[in-house]
Length: 222
Image 1 (cartoon, rainbow, N blue to C red):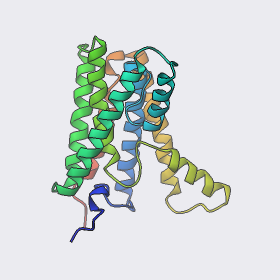
Image 2 (cartoon, rainbow, N blue to C red; image 1 turned 90 degrees about the vertical axis):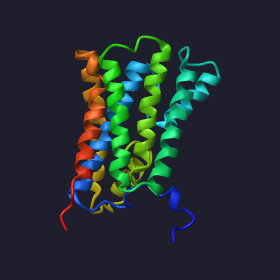
Image 3 (tube, rainbow, N blue to C red; image 1 turned 60 degrees about the vertical axis):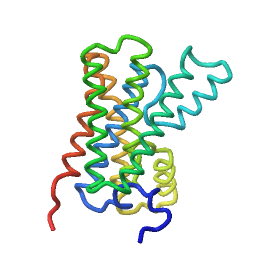
Image 4 (cartoon, helix red, strand yellow; image 1 turned 120 degrees about the vertical axis):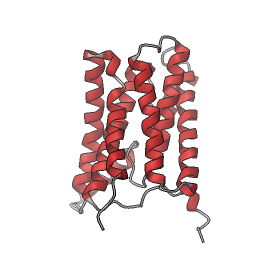
């Protein structure tokens, strides 16, 4: 019988102890960095997945600081992310093969955003809010995929640096460093794409998440 707190558990296992699982986490971390960089640069000074940053921006906007319209964008990001988390929690409890299903939903949302942006149909502030909602939904779903975080890293960085400071490096910390680097790499790749080929700005996030899906959906050897 499921425990009372079962619905709050992420879809994947609490720990990842195989190279394929770690590779998927690296790709998802890079996708997170790419999604946040795209939203910040192209949608307008908010984040798709970093809700701590969005809450700070909301507080600043409430005090009259920040650029015009940022409060509405922040609320859109918070609400869409919340809906993504809620859907992921339900799917993680009730759907068969939940991890591939949830990742497929994320990829579909990111791909839709990439196509809309690439076609140049995002022209108004309302269009940008809709695009932000797609990205926020995707990042909310991603947050429910595994207990290992792939789109919020303050706790990861804090624990990692703390272990380094006291000399208690543990097995798997190389992968932790890799995830932190992947976020930076994903963001950098997107920033370069926006600079050189603006229409491809949202492609990296979708492609990286799709690569993670291929890894997670492939049969594992017994």
